[in-house]
Image 1 (cartoon, rainbow, N blue to C red):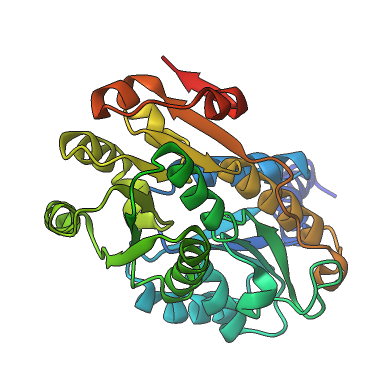
Image 2 (cartoon, rainbow, N blue to C red):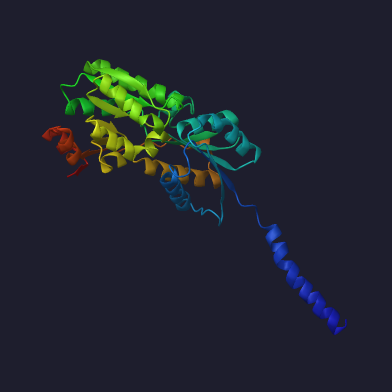
Length: 327
């Protein structure tokens, strides 16, 4: 073999080998991330989900890819988005928000689905059983709806003379809104309270809703779950103080933004756990055998500064049970 031919052969082999090696590497698994939120509103939740994925051994861009679908508060877009992820043959669908989970479940019975929902997944029809979900669906519930009655009870304890309350829900989150209303109205009957269920579809409705709250002589307000309330939590906190309406939310940022109280589980930890489960399914775990995870701790946060501004005296018994008091 002539020297020039030898050099050409060796050079050609050196060039071809990396290409061949890359071609033989297994394809990177793909997670379909389906959310009813906007990217801005869902940013901190997504970060928590990624932390969970990393705990399970997966880092986006290194050994897993993520296809994002954000409905931007337009839940009617979720079924088409879920169907698109199915057509793309993603390995797992991480369906966050209740409407997203329901849309994913309707789209496939074969691709594993990991949900994060604020309500009872058995009642929603997502799983047959919490301990052994069956099928292709499992995940995490933050039980926002199931402790809605407790939020009303806490507000009633704080405002024992108030007989009229209001609940804010987003009618676009139909399943969540109905479940929330059912829990709160049931608790209201036991407490002898009248509760008005008020619909809020966007932040543009906030001012009009507080006009209605004043007209109805509402003594206290329970803020329901949903992306519109998450995104507008700072505005809601300001409006409750401006209109002198004591309010409670499940979102811990509400008293931090100047609102009165919050009571709920750590939603960010629910998203982290959903990321962990997604990683476990990518490694081969069967979703049918992964129990639905539930929170074990619910935090009560009270903003005393807001209470003083609202002219509300917080009982010592309530302060003693608070996990955090903002002076």
